[in-house]
Length: 104
Image (cartoon, rainbow, N blue to C red; front, side):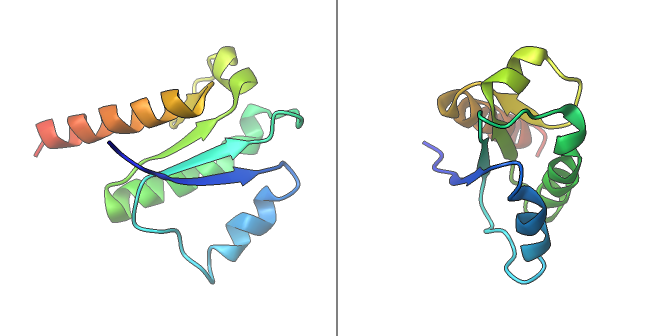
């Protein structure tokens, strides 16, 4: 079973967290980012996370998935995994691993 690093962020924390990654890089494993459900998240708020997910996949062949039920239910067309629950985010990461293994 995959055990990703789990990070919880509020809308006001995200910019500082992304900036802080220049000093302390992400771990070399799968990551689940839980976005606070009390914040009103929009597609535009995910742009820095989408870029980060692409970089993380390219550098480490690992997945970043986001957990936020309202965003998942909106069926946004973005280039990153968005799941309504932590377990579903982990399932998406496991599917990515299977796909990577198939394409080796």
